[in-house]
Length: 481
Image (tube, rainbow, N blue to C red; front, side, top):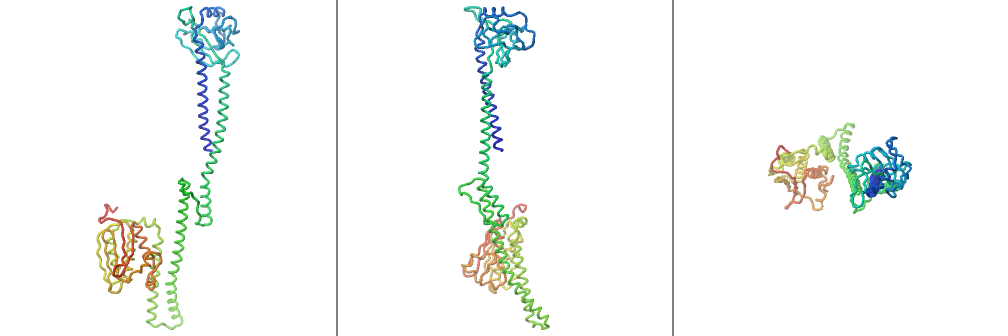
């Protein structure tokens, strides 16, 4: 409808403009012919004879009335061929040439030309003859010849009226208007049909996209893909590719979510089973009235406490992984990484008092979430403490945004290095040790959100080197920005 309306407006404007241009051209041609004919001088004898044959009483009927020469041939004289021709005097008297096809109705403008004949100015106008036929009229001062060799002069107080019928011109304009109307109608209908076809063809991919979205909303089937031509790069193709990317990301997110739930359930099952067993033993002992030996009871309570600590750690890690990016972004600020490392070192020394921890920490400022960054560094140091032999050494260094933590433990086998940052993954040799398998996953995520990267490699001579690189500066930015 919009295309058809736009085309209709454009065609209407062009058609109207064309019609007026043609009308102007036709009238210009008529005016040129009238002027060419009317400007030929008339013999003085013809004028005198014609005027003497006309009545001397002026026309006093109406502004458009004619004189008594309206019979068209009372004078017996001819002034022009093939045109309406008559003389009009300033008092309204008209004298019609014998060859004029009819009498022209005069107006005050015609009489004004006759009255001011000396000015030489004439007028063009549309008028009618005595029979009501439309004519194009030219009224100009009358030029007469005095004789052979003399110059034409303006006859005083008299004007010459020449006119041609407008019937043919009006017919031509009517035919042109009808033709333009037909062409415009066909053009508008054609434009509407073409616009409808183009709109349907252009919106067909949108219909497919709508169907796909409705299907996903109805069935939650994220495997739906919209076919897109590889070479196409228009808006619809980009929208389709974006939809496919979105469904792929959602499917991946759902898969990760399901995997996280499955892994969390598996990890929770072990401590919960152990905790349940220990609690049932304690409960049965109380119910039967047979108390457990003091050493066994103490061991059971110690195990219960350890399992509860492990559950609390696992739940905390799951909460950390479930936090959205928006929640993290609201807490990001400039952090003094050296202070964070020092705080993490203090906690690590408490957890491994038998270990020797050396540190060389230089100032470095980064943009990150303080609590998350400290937890990540604590996790790295906890791993070093956990796998270090008794009395071993842990070397920590921070210089120009590169934090390295090296332990002298058994190290990580080469084939296990690609999996160390996977959720819930634990080395077979470490599954007997406390932990949820989420610590390094949290480290990797936190460091990546701060714009850095973390790697684990085997250290020369044994042990593991954890390297964290975070972009920043050695001096704090102005105003903490």
